[in-house]
Amino acid sequence: MIIGIPREVVAGETRVSMVPSLVQNIVRDKHDVIVERGAGTRASFPDESYVKAGAKVANTAAEVYRKANIILKVQSPAKSSRKLESDLFMSGATYIGFLQPLSSATVISSFLKRKVTGFSMEYIPRITRAQSMDALSSMATVAGYKAVLLATEKLGKMFPLLMTAAGTVPPATVLVLGAGVAGLQAIATAKRLGAKVEAFDPRPAVMEQVKSLGASFVEMEMPEDAETKGGYAKELSPEFIKKEHEAIAARLPKVNVVITTAQVFGKRAPLLITKAMVKQMPPGSVIVDLAAEQGGNCEWTKAGTTVVKDGVSIVGAVNLPASIPVDASQMYSRNVYNLLKLLYPKPDATPDFNDEVVKGACITRDGAIVNEQVKNSLQKKGAKK
Image (cartoon, rainbow, N blue to C red; front, side, top):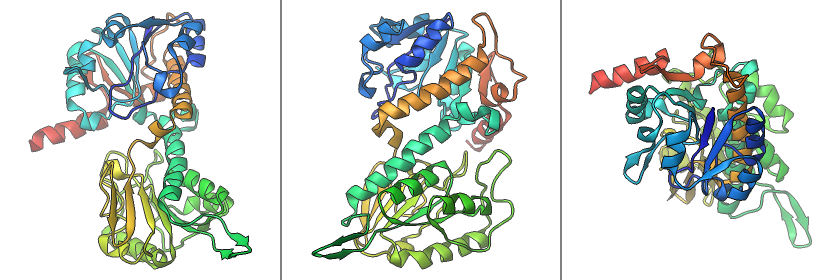
């Protein structure tokens, strides 16, 4: 097969879907690889490194799409030069990458028309066997790390405890809301920088993980079913949310930095910090909201911008993995390569759609939406219109 690696066209996206070291593996697996010129440049992977790995370099994306049976991407297909990328795909091609199917109706329609088999990295099942393909977790790791660094830039004080001849500088206090992959990485990073760290999560099971990283856990009465079978957080009752707000608000007057990471898969992010709660924070404090693209955990959050309210800076963090493209690309590439190997264990193999991972990640196939969750959600949206 011919595997295509186009240059990402979404503004601000610096990652590449496959790094040269793994292209070498793909070539060794008896596939041909064609890379658009400049596809890896923004992630510090020059064209020459792809050529050395055995790939061919195409001058345009159109040439990649015209020749490739399999397209590997980071971002969902978008418009480039007024044309939708997926409209350039070869009929019957296979797509592997983030897809955001619930908010990409035009792309899904294009896939159906061209009978593209679309695999969405967001829909990789969260089971042990699929951990090596879990791109959401990989990118959340990068985002959690970067969120803390953003906070250090915005905060007007240092993170560690310092005892100097000029006096003692107390450590910054960091509160992390949500102890998933991003939250745990934020906790670990803030601790490494010397901050005093607290964390809150409605799932009791993560308490030990939080404490193992040296942070204290903000305790309150927890619901028994705070997560789905797939490992994602659930929407919680209004009664619990009220108690949650009270527990968080009690910590805010003593906190310098809040990192919010709470998201509900496929839905708006839960509101954890209201406008009134922001007023309780000390002037100069910082909130970095990793759920900004899903509506935000803070009521003041605006995706892609920093808002200052009542002396508090609220950072609407967007696509933080793109700010660390070298490692983010390497991690994402490994996830994609592992899925590719599962789909095509041999050069002449075909995907086993009875496999739990393959079936879960597949959104479109043979001109139809085959993922029931996506199909039902898009049908409901269509009915509302």
